[in-house]
Image (cartoon, rainbow, N blue to C red; front, side, top):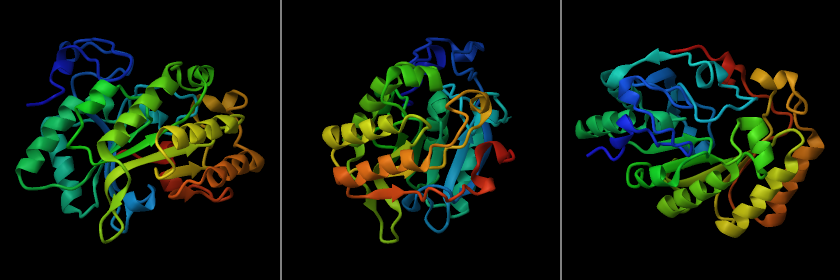
Length: 302
């Protein structure tokens, strides 16, 4: 049975709980309708090492999003709705193609609006004997009730903590409730998976990883989230601290979003990782540029 079936008719998948009838063509905040939309898919090598490995992560970039981030690098498909309608059979074919390509996992990027359809497709592929770890790649703005229905089929959560203040979350992503929801969600993800488990090749089999993108003028919020993580979950959770923020979309015209974080701001966050004693994770080099083919708005559709 599809645990998300009620959301076909009354969508309450994300914390906004719009309650719209998707099968009747109605759209809620994210503007997702009744047909799955995908911008691109394929082997992706830009994730953390246990996710990308050597063969790449089998990544599916879904169109639409439950947030409206000023700085979103994926805005062509997350905000503007670019992508292709693939249908249920098309989504099954995507899962199969990524499996046959030898990708380490199925990496679902911003999947929340499409969970009823994704679950159906995944079930059909698994019934054919194809199975690999499922990575749930999310902004962190998730509804706990929805996450509970993912128990047992999502293996790895790759989640964000972007803000520590509601006013920042409202300004940056149009969601004053982000902080509370993201922290509740992370607790639930951790409850389901626990610490990161790797196979013999160093590829993630199970666990939760937390990303912290350092935002301009908001390094203190990243530190506050690290402090919250240390107290609420523990320092064994792998953290990925990222310096790659680049002004994009609407951020290019709004200060302080229209600049990179300074080296001093980034160093303040890195020092907190060390001070708090996090045991695992990754810290980007401040000056390391993101390759063009990994920058969202520079990616071409599939």
